[in-house]
Length: 507
Image (cartoon, rainbow, N blue to C red):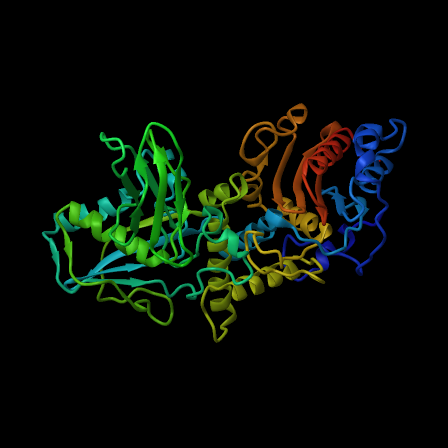
């Protein structure tokens, strides 16, 4: 096995890691799915060496069409302990978030905070976005004992305290930090109504979703009652759901509209799962208008979209700041790493792209999927990682056009491990048997695996760190692509892979 440490000091950036060799490919030895229950992970001979055990796991897959890629590196020495098709580009699913977070850490810095500003300019209200995904995020709000509109209430009260109750010149929203492409063109159409594929804006609230709750009227057969959060006048409820003793309430959202159709029957209070809203900036504007009105501040006219920031990204001197909302990078990382929240990853990628574009003095100094992708490639190259065959379509891994190798994932983790601020990313990863997407997984290894999971149809991936014997630690990635049916067999292989690593002495 080769070591990557030998060129560590020759890479173009500090805390860097020299990368992969030329792409290699090979056939995947397979086992028919029908025999997998008999010849699965438990059948690996106990007397084999650890590397041989790992290889046996990955060359005896339950589906003939499945492909596997894996890599294990000891972070401190750079020694490559294991590789299996480690340079084969694969669909990473949500392990793509590792690259997004590493880039955000490098470009923005550990002390960065997203900042959304509320100001007045004469008799008009101005809200300037920073791409913050945390404004009105239900989980972050709950942790602070707030609601999704608490920050809006705070701004309304600040205006009232200044004697401002009527904004006759209306509301201006500035989302220009990002481009106006809210939905990635390669996201699958059937995902677009779901909370995990919510649109991405320079201004965001409530994860850019609406939460609709229904409950029965006192009269059987009457239309159900309903509520929408965040409160706004944009959502149009088409209510054909009746109050009854039995039945199921159904919610349908026609694509790219503000209409939400409720049908069926409802016998008890029923909160639907969050549903995406197609225009993030207008959702924030609508929630702000309603919340301000409830607190005695009226806003005239419809919101106007325009750039308010100066060309150098600063705020004009004419603005009088009323309040702001800040979300630290640490909070964003936690939502990305432990909760795999896609919106947070996409906002981080675009915000990183904006910062990168400004520093590079490009002609398109705006946060976009393109500038974000260029920031990722530039960051990894700066770290000494070979980006051959790396394709960055989005930041969350929702796009099936993303491609990365197991080695690229692991070398990124090694690079992060060597950074003084890398603990921020590490602490955001799920801990097996404890929290996040690994909360219910690998209980026998509880606390010894911290990793990012990735799952979509035909894809299962895991990348992170394992605490092994004799105080050793390894960075690893294991990816499966191309299988059909349940991912459970591949979850079992990942578990066995981690068990072997956890007992490996590195020899």
